[in-house]
Image (cartoon, rainbow, N blue to C red; front, side, top):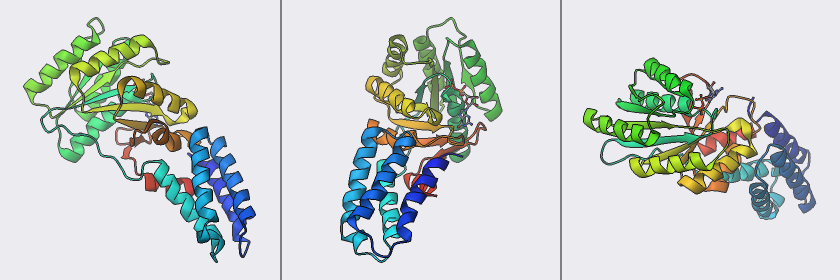
Length: 297
Ligand code: GDP
C-alpha cells in the first residue's frame, strides 16, 4: 500500500511522545530526527525534508507544544498542516480556455501513464461536464501508442484523430486542431511521444507542438513509483516546457511517497490529479489535505 512505511514511521516517532506528560525541547528534537529519517527513507527530496523539518521544529519548540498537555496531538497537528502546505494547500483546477477548444497537452516519459491518463481525463470531462473531447495521437515513435489511444477512445466513446506513423507529429497536431475547430470539440487532448529518458529531440518536438497548439494546460504525467526520479523528470520537463500541472500516477501501487511530497516544492507546479488504477475511472483530483491525512494514517 502507498505510504505504508512512511505512515508507520511517523506514527511511531510521534507516538513516543504520547507516553510523556510534558515534553522538553530535547524530546522534540528527537522526534524531529526520526521524522527527518522517515521522510528521507520515503524518498522525499533532501531540500524539501530540510525545510520541512526546520519549520515543524520551530513551531514545535514554540509554546504550542512544550506548554501543551497533549504534546503528541499538537505535533501531529503541526506535521499535518505543514504536509498540506508542502503539497500546495488547495486543489488546483484544470485551466479552461474562454473560447473552445481548451487544449490539454499530455507530456511525460514512456510508461508513466500518459496515454492512459489522457483517456481517463477525457472520460472525466465527458461524464462530469458533458464535454465533447477529441484526442490527438501524436506519438508516432511507438506504433502501439496510436492503437492504444484508439482502444482507449473506443472504450470511453471519444474520437481519436491520427495520421499513422509517417506524418510529422507537429503536422498531426495542426490537422487535429483544425478538425476540432470544425467539429466544435470543446476539449482537445494531445497525446505526445514519450522516451525512456529526457532527450533533446523529444523536447524540441514538444516545444514545437506547444508553440503550434498554445495549450491551456500542459500536464506532465509522472510515475509515483519512481520516487526521486519522478521529481528530476518533472524538473526537466518543467525547465523546457513550463508545464502547468502534474498528474501523479500509480498511487494505488506500493509507492513510498517521495514524489507526492516533493514535486510541488521542487518545481513550483501543482499536482492536479492522481491516478489510482488502470481503469478509465481511476483518476482523482489531488487534494493536499486528504493526501496529508492519508500519509499520517
Ligand atoms: P505512456 O507510455 O506514458 O503513455 O503510459 P501508458 O498510458 O501506456 O501506461 C503504462 C502502464 O501503466 C499501463 O499498463 C497502464 O495501464 C499503467 N497505468 C497508468 N496509470 C496507472 C495508475 O494510475 N495505476 C496503475 N496501477 N497503473 C497505471
